[in-house]
Every structure is written in structure tokens, then in C-alpha cells.
Image 1 (cartoon, rainbow, N blue to C red):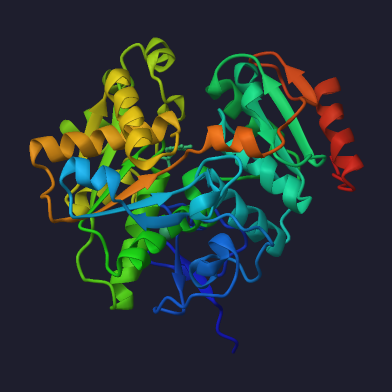
Image 2 (tube, rainbow, N blue to C red; image 1 turned 90 degrees about the vertical axis):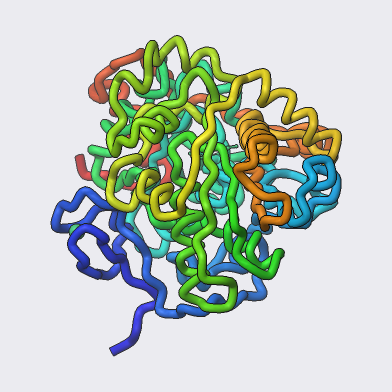
Amino acid sequence: MVKEKYLLSCPGCGRSFSDRYTLDCPSGCDALLRTVYRDRRLTLQNLPGIFRYKGWLPIEGHLRIDAGAVSYESVGLARELGLSHLTITFSGYWPERGGRMETCSFKELEAQPTVLRLREKGAGVLQVSSAGNTGRAFCQVSALTGAPVVVVVPASAADRLWTTVPSPNVCLITADGDYSDSIAFGREICSLPGIVPEGGAKNVARRDGMGTVMLDGTLAAGRLPDAYFQAVGSGTGAIAAWEAAERLIADGRFGSRLPALHLSQNLPFVPMVRAWEAGRRDIVVEDMPEAGASIARVSADVLTNRHPPWGVRGGVYDALAASGGRMYAVSNEDARSAGRFFTDTEEIDLDPAAAVAVASLIRAVEEGFVEPDEHILLNVTGGGYERAAEDLDRYPVEPYLQVRAGEAFEGDVRDTVLGWLAKQGVTVRA
Ligand SMILES: *Cc1c(COP(=O)(O)O)cnc(C)c1O
Ligand SMILES: [Zn+2]
């Protein structure tokens, strides 16, 4: 019997099985499936970007894209904060440091292995609903590989969708209303046979792709960090960091203790902070008072997910509990000044979400939640927009279809999507 590179395993029932772009446990457990790789030791590949970590990605081949996270030991910020071991892992555009994510966020770490996994499992056309960075990352990977994707975004976010090379294989649909309306419409499109939802936190390619931040930061420092800082919206990146750290512990060469996860959200929308402080495995409406108005007031709106994978087995709550973690609520003002401080000390501009993480690190140092000699990994999840605007071309992705909030997926609307699929050479028997 040929041994497979990896299997999927369900932490709910303990079953293992082969991957068919599987998003849920076949027994129906409320748990996030995980990859279990045959190789317990991480072997680096001589491949570009994220594919250096192919050994621990749920794919067989690789893409010819040189866009991975880059890590270095901080001098400027570390000195200002009095930290002796601060590793920065940067996902964005910063050519001087080898950063080549041209859409400037760590969502490219998710998009690359997801597109490839779907292609290898032969499963169809990907559908993504996004309020911004995720959609842009998938459009970029589509542009670079020709993979067809259907992206649904709120009409108000359409101007965030651009690529640095033309993206003829993207079907961009704008939906009136907020992010939830886009998600609902996206789900309806997935009723067409052959259209596959990206899957969010349930998608192991997304998580293992984001987990390369922990791999890269650990390899750069030569050991696992004691503390890991990241701003969270869905928390998928944090779950990924936890899973990657567990793999590195099993590898045996990088330490035996899980890094404490220090996760931050942007006030006034901080549901995970509130649920954590109340010690609850579920997020309740009181954790999101006046959700719509709160979401409208945060500076980092990629952090405003109303349904994060919090209480699910293997989700963010478990990651925080297992690692002895902590959560931070950061104001817009603190995030902005932390962002300026970072740009002054490290000389690159940040995504507003990354500025929230920097603010949480500053607070942790001030309050003594981390010691000056601890090994710290700061996940800078996005940045380099100003550099990218100087260096790179920018192609707006034009909407193929515009729909009203709550519009049903039928009639002309449905025919338009079927027509696009036909042009892509995909025939759907509907
Ligand atoms: C999506 C995003 C985050 C939050 O990541 P999650 O995995 O959703 O918690 C943080 N920073 C940036 C720049 C992002 O795009
Ligand atoms: Zn199960």
C-alpha cells in the first residue's frame, strides 16, 4: 500500500481518512478536521515562497509563485520596547526583505495552497465570500494561475479588489448590504454542482498555509517562540499558529512548549475578547452589542467577523486555553499610533489590522504580560501597500454581476453565473 503524504483526522471522533477537499467530518462532528502529515520532521524544499514548507501543506505539487512570509530579527522596534528577542514575520510587499505578497496581506498564504488543493483533488470552481483581503488574495492567485474563482463581496468593498496582473478568470459579484449578505449569496451559488465553497476555518489548506508564519518565524529564530502576537478576526490564523506549533514540538528540534497566543481585536467590536474574559465557549449577542454600528467604527474591519470558529472543537477557544493565552481589546487611536511607531522603527507601512497586533505587543510589554528576554513572534499580517503602489501595476477587478441584498439565486442572475461558467469551459448540469 502506498502511504499517503497526509490524512485528515477528526478531533471529535478520532477517525482518519483521505482528503477529497473534505471540509467536514463524515460522521458530522462539530470539530475542525486537521491534517496529519506522515513526516513528523519538517523538511524544507528548495521551492519559492510558501512552497518551501510544502512538506506540511496538503498538496502534492507547487505553484510558481514566490510569495511567502518573511522573518527577521527586529532591531528598531525591539530596542524601543526593550525586548531582546523579537522576531517579526511579515506578510506583504517589502522587496528589500524578500516580501513579495503583492496584494499585501497574509491571505495569500491561504489562497495559494487552497487553489492548488482544489485543483489536485479535481473538485471544481472555488467560491469565496470576502470583505476585502481574502477576495483580493484569491483574485491575485487566479490571475497568476488561471484558476477560475467566483468572488462575492459587499458592493461597498468592491474597490478593494485589485490585482497586480490582469485576472480574466475571476467572476466578481457585488452584493448590496453587508458581509453577511455576501456570505448568504455565496452559499446559494454553491448549490450549483461543481462550485465549491472555500470553507473558511474548516479548510485545512487555509490553516496550514497560514501556519507557515509559525514555521518561518521559528526557523528564523532557531526555536519556538514563548509568545505569539496576532490580530484576529476569524481567528483562523491563530488556530493555524497553534497547530503548526504542535507539529514543531512533535518534530523535536525546536522546543517542547506551546507559545502563548496573544490575540487582539479592534474596539468597539471585540466578541472574542468578551467571550474569553467571561470564560465562555460560545459567543452570545451580548458580546456584540450594536454589532452593525460597532463594526462601522473599527479602523481594521478585516477583524470584524460575527461568526468566528470560537467554541468548535479545535477552534480559537481551545487554542487559547491550550497555550495559556490572552486577549486584548485595542482602540483605533492606540492602533493608529502603534502603526506609526512601527513605521518609524521598522520602515514599512502596515495594514490597520497589523497595527492592532503591534498595539497589543506594546501593551503587553507595558503591563508585564511578557518579559523583556522572552522570545516573541510578532505576526505582521499585512503591509507594504505604499511600496506596492509605487512599484506595481494595479488592475481593478470589474464586477461581472451586481445583485441586491437578499436577492434570490434564480432566473437571470443564475443564468449569468452559468454563462460565466460555460465561458470558463465548465459545464454544470443544472
Ligand atoms: C484576515 C486578516 C487578519 C485576521 O486573520 P484571521 O485569521 O481572520 O483571524 C489579520 N490581519 C490581516 C491583514 C488580515 O487580512
Ligand atoms: Zn468526527
